[in-house]
Length: 65
Image (cartoon, rainbow, N blue to C red):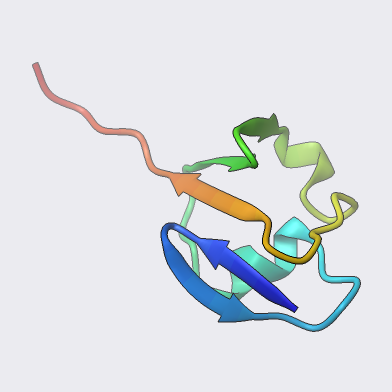
């Protein structure tokens, strides 16, 4: 299935979870995840299913001032 992760298209197997998308892009903590603009808590990454054409944003914190 087609999923967009940080504005890049990827093909993931059906029944993939948020954790599969994180593994796909080798995300390094800390980060926050949103699927279709909905925040997904870390505790739900392994159970939160992805669907065709979902938009996944993986955002790392930025420091500075």
